[in-house]
Amino acid sequence: MKVLHIIDSGGLYGAEKMLIALTTGQVLADVQPCVCSIGLPGETEKPLERALRAAGIDVWPLRMRKGLNLVGGLALVREARNRGFDVLHTHGYKGNILLALLPRFLRGIPWVVTTHGWSHGAGSTRSRLYQWLDERAICVADRVVAVSESMLSLRPFARRGVMDRSTVITNAVSRPGTTGVVDKRIASFCEPSVTAAIVGRLDPVKGHSQLLQAMVGVRLRLLVLGDGPLMEALQEQCRMLNIEDRVMFAGFRDDVADCFAAVQFLVMPSLSEGLPITLLEAIGVGLPIVATRVGGVPTVVENTHAGLLVPRGDVEALAAALARMTDDEGLRSKHRDAMAMNSAALFDTELMVRSYLGVYSRAAA
Image (tube, rainbow, N blue to C red; front, side, top):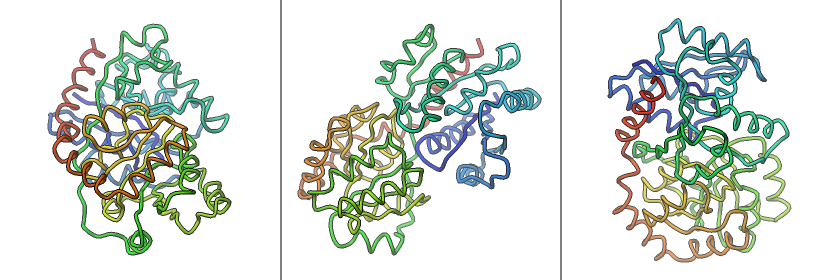
């Protein structure tokens, strides 16, 4: 079976890491995966493309103008048919919308969508428009995969026929490897006191702003790993809150697992999530968690006893949880020990690969 994965990647975050794990597992299962990586004209090699090539996965870089590009979608499908792909598998709104623009008879190849999460109206007007289109795009896919049971309660799955074509497949990743070497600048920042890390694109839905507010009364340093449109606004917020000396914006990093060795816990104050890969990676290295009750996060945290959960958007509750995790080394140690005993199922990539093969078969039928 030949599977074409389609993604417009903005870094090497959760969906990208899940895709690397899935495609490498598919190779071992005698599937022939290829990743169509969409970008803008003139854009150089993306981090995902580099990581996939290093893993031995076939990459098809496709550069096209942004927007509702019907011509680009037609060109993609035409080339996919010429290459003999049996299934199209999209990860993210760009691929979903491109394929939804095409009538089924033009597409001609079974189409599977994985819904990694929605931002629930956060962000710019353009972002909200694309989310609105994305929610409707999945209505015409042959099969839809949710990455957690909780996602099935979201509005898009209530649309006509979507639930009947939906399956839940929990994300899995390989246990993160480390080099044992921590960037000197990061190590120097983290060393003086207890430090938490937040990982992800600097986007409103990730809750960075609420986290900075919660830090004001807590004796904690914060390592921010990721890049995005909110960088300048968040840096200005740090200055306004007088916490800029306790927050380090390290930008996008491809050595996140090594950075984890420099911090004492991970914080995930997201307003919306599917099942974040960063959460699984942190548990894989025994890093305690403070997170909001969104998406598949509560199930994973509670099943592995990985840390503390708070309501989304509740700055006061988040501050209290940060203070507990910061001040109590015994609490952090208890969560590390519990994760070592309860986390094995999160890294069953073979089960994830087998589950997707079943979805592909149903889509083809």
